[in-house]
Image (cartoon, rainbow, N blue to C red; front, side, top):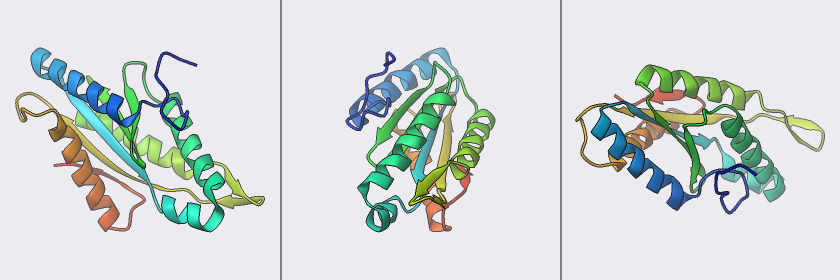
Length: 167
């Protein structure tokens, strides 16, 4: 077990409350020291339907596989957590280009996850929203998260399975 406090699902990710607190702290640092802060918000497409069709064990298998992927492919200075059914990564010192690149890599890796149901491969996809806060464009910590939520909503409204950078 690493230094991260595990969420209730024991995925090694920060819980809802913890990740919001860490986002608030990192946002304050970014404003004070004038560095960029990005946020990646990720949702597994049709997660509820997967659970309904194949059972909660398959849903958990997918969630654990995605959590493991986030833990393995994030930097030690990044914060990975859960916001309900969504996954969030807080990326200090990361501009829009870097955040979008990471989001696209994660999106592609999720699509190649080896999840099986009764020995048949199960296709997993994700919708990803990305936002960046740099400089003085916002005074509230949750603005960067709300922008990522808006980008995620845009992806979902277009059918999901892609990455959108908030403008």
